[in-house]
Structures are given as structure tokens and as C-alpha cells.
Image 1 (cartoon, rainbow, N blue to C red):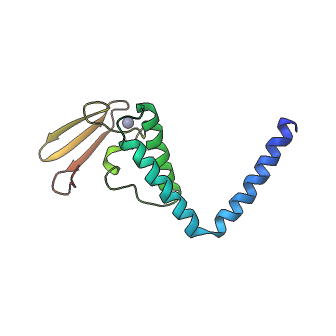
Image 2 (image 1 turned 180 degrees about the vertical axis):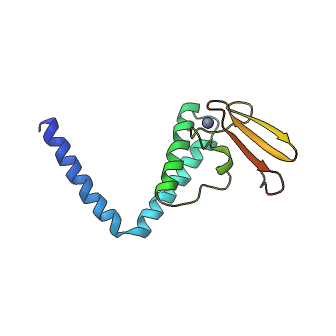
Image 3 (image 1 turned 90 degrees about the horizontal axis):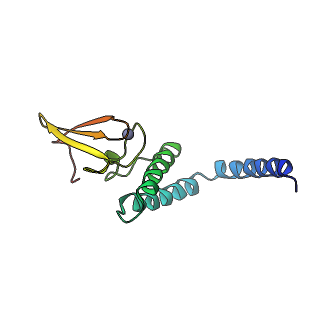
Length: 123
Ligand SMILES: [Zn+2]
């Protein structure tokens, strides 16, 4: 098959899958949640290459946004909203406390995240 025809074929196939996905909401959300759990396990694993963890963080954010699912509680403060990289204190992020507010600064895009301590969970 020629590449051009192959592209048309694939786009038609994609259209079929899109229709099927639209009909089955609970399965879609279930699959999204499986992906969210899997991506979270990559992000928190310090043995995985850091670039892979960064792209897992971006994919996680995309998956959550697309399927209208909340970001996992233990990760939502540790993904940069500017460049969607993993924020690791001392490695990819600088964490400072000023006036009872925790300021996390992403070292790749310098975006700051401010969070008061009182509402903080255990991370
Ligand atoms: Zn950033």
C-alpha cells in the first residue's frame, strides 16, 4: 500500500475508533484511570530516566485534562503548570518557605507555585 493511501486508511480507522469511544463512556474513563495510575508509577519512580519521567508527567496532565479526571493528589503539586515537567525538590525545583507559604520554583521555566502550609497534605 502506498504511504498516502495508508494515511487515509489510518485516518478512517481512527474515525471508527473515535465513534466507538464516544459510545462507551465508563470504559473510556476506566482506561484513562488505568493510564493515570501507570503514568503516576513512572513519575514517582526515581530509577526511571528523568526525561521519561518528564514526558510521563506531560502525558498524565494531558490524559487528566482530556478525560476530565483530577490529577492524583500526591502528584498535583509536583508537576509544573508551565512546562509540565516533574518538580523534584533540589533537582528540578527550588523550594522555599516565606511567610508560611511554600514557594516551589521550576528550574527549567522559572514558574512559581505558591501554596500555604495549613492546607498541605503529607508531601
Ligand atoms: Zn516549568
